[in-house]
Length: 284
Image (cartoon, rainbow, N blue to C red; front, side):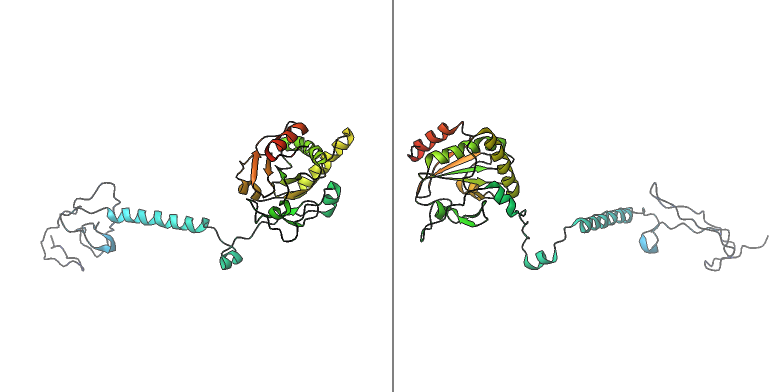
């Protein structure tokens, strides 16, 4: 029998026995590379290389380590997390990015026909040179009757005042407003009665007052025509320190200080008159 012919890429002396092909301490559950026999190879198979990344062979007798696979999974997860974060990151508008300010939400438009239908009285105006004091100093709100700005502390200075905080969606407020209108007629000019609509939608406030006055007219009761202001941001409530409930009535002294905050609906005109007389000293 002829001597074995050595492989072209693995020279070996004739007659040298072929070593048994095998794996050195191959970890469990790893995929095996496939080594195909070539025509120019001898009958001996190369030892399968399951070494580290980059094709480096594992040293004989040393276990093949699993950390490259773990790192590949970790890297894949990190890439997915970064991609998701970039996808959901909020994009600022060009104006916001340039100025750093958030554009204000425009208030709902009020049609002048809505103001005319409500027939509200004009808001009080400040006397010349009067600035006013108390917690309402510096607060300016728009009048519901005509949209004119009203500096509250100055406009209410020099006379006891009753401020009623309400909203068009507040059922107890709707029931209380006619009693406040009747009290305003009874007090005359001794006490300034002013409503403060505490909701951004002034158009719905005017529509509600128009509807309410229609019901009151049919019943022969006093209609709600006394003045009011629009407070979309709740500035009055915050300045007074009133709770976030409605209705709330604030009694102010002539110097603008708070005499009392009433956190309940009034039961009628007499209840309003008694409360004002007790806390402001004005009988009506």
